[in-house]
Image 1 (cartoon, rainbow, N blue to C red):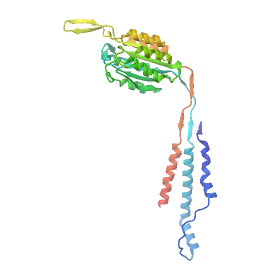
Image 2: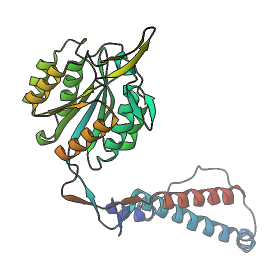
Image 3: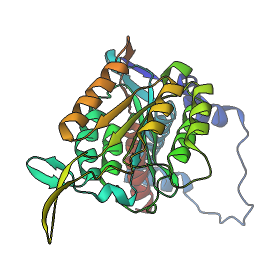
Image 4: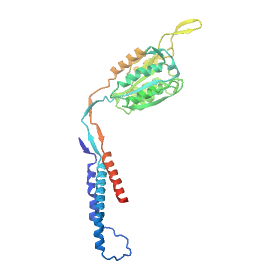
Length: 325
């Protein structure tokens, strides 16, 4: 459907005619005149030479330029057919640990040994892609917590910034409490039933001014559900000078605190020991936090003001060319 956003500006089309019709003409400077005999005859010769035709073309071009400018100011638009878009209105923040311990290579992706952060990137990207209709944001935390991506419907941008996350970029420690507090600050203005934080870490809170339990109580007060994920294998083979032995690379993981955070806020705690378990966890979170609800009809809008504006510019260029001759 075609229409104008500011249709009332169309009345400006007659403005030049009103000015010419009702405002008095300006008188030119008084100059000494030269009396020329046969002046009427000379004027008729000029008309025959085509000056009047040139002025007429100039007037029509000026009117065309004015008409095109008015049409552009009226903002012509094309409204497409309604499209039903699934929208849940859910706001979901991802909190990802990028401390030094995430460099531990105890995960496997595609048969290749990778560190914990690379495994998170591979699995979380698919999770983000499935959040169609949700606003997703990204928090990275180490010594401090930072907003890497604010809440947005642009899931491609969130995936891009997650892929660019680097281990140790924010320090070697782990500020779990500050990550929760920052998420609460970003989510507290959103609808209460739609506030969710998925927090992923492989260690314990070793930095920051806010303790995890205090941040969890604040999240519960603000209606933010926190799902926590503990990352890291429980058993890997270590090779040394005296042979091989089994070690637990996740001794630093504070599962007790992560469970308490989930319990206080009404979320759930998950344990990801390998890539398969991590993928299953994100699928479970999909079920706990469904993305789609009632479809919201939207009509695509296309602005068309550029066409009459281009016509006005062309008309002005032709008019200038005529005047120069």
